[in-house]
Image (spheres, rainbow, N blue to C red):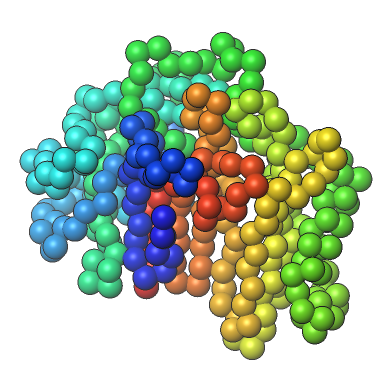
Length: 322
């Protein structure tokens, strides 16, 4: 599938797998923390075509960064943009399940209808969605800012009912393991760079970061980045960033790499890993954010060993570009 990164907004409600070409029936959406007991989710990308009601009330910006400035919308206005057969038909009182990233799927109820208007004249989309409220007894599970949502199932699974589930790990890695990962990424960059590029990079101390997470089957994985970009990058400086997906056993190895190379000083970063959620059926979901000089994209992907981010199945994404 082709994703436009800067010139337009993308929203993929259903996706096609590279292996089978079949459209998946189960749908997932990105969600963000709105406040202490509510989350925000945009179900559909639409075109308002300057019809947004002038009296639409702008509400408080969500706690989760990247979910734009929402306004309250009426059910009648929302319904005007749900005429496509494949559109998600949602209304006040509907229940969905929130995938928290700790193995729990907690029920949420749509309590306000919202939307956000994009710069449609430059090719961007607008969005419609809702605020959903979490039950008082489940508020304690909202410990992150980014989640996934799916249609409600009668008996959501709980973390205690599964021996393994997909989730981010908080424990820091031992220093010797970090050093081995840095060595692997450095060697990989050396093979990707030209001799002159590598000579330049050797004079820069790269910044290192790593996150660990479990797949739905319990296997351990790492997402690590080395960034040789100058801290105050200008138009005449290069930006060199390499990230890798790694497995620790039977030996520490790189499964796939993401690279960012620029000779024009374009300010951009490789996607940041915001959360890991369990999609059910032994599937692992990644919530990532990609930010450029004049664009931003939020993505929900299904993790696959050996695949780069553009190759992983896309479940849902949205963003803005100029």
